Image (cartoon, rainbow over all chains, first blue to last red; front, side, top):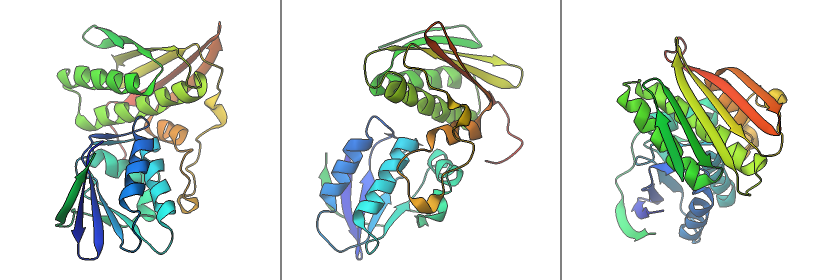
Length: 113
Length: 146
């Protein structure tokens, strides 16, 4: 799974460059995001603009990351494609996550694989 | 590994009950239905319902052991009719997924059957001769906006 890491103001922006965030990659996704957010502090925005498909396992992994970051470190999602937005709506997770219409313009830090 | 044999409005496939194979099977179904000119949102619904159902079979039916899933999809009237068969352990979804998990509980799982039910109609399950048979219909045009 490929991701890029950027910084937009205080926030860490993690862009997921994977068309399907599903059961096959859910654990890898959690591991990568845990490693990238190991340093304390900044809020985290997941840029999902390249994710065309999300299933309940992928959603569960995003929820797991939110819980891992803890209550003082918000996890927000950005740039949901049509199908991904629908899953957030169906499961009412759109009431839990702050959703940005667009990914913030981020300064690249590094790319991870 | 998967194998597809398709008529114009009916598609049969065999797929290993394993997550990567499920991915490529769903991709093949998606491509096939795109060439039939089905609407994007119908294909998205099928993609999601099939992925949820087949992932359940791999995880709970075959419990991550090897096994095969047989998939059949046909267009009939205003519906895509889907049927899945496997030889995994019996599961009965009748009691599952009738309501959405409370979002404030931040559950990491337990959404699968709710999603399948929400997208489909006529969800049926039967256990026959050591096989699970799951079928559901997806509307080709929605009246409501899910």
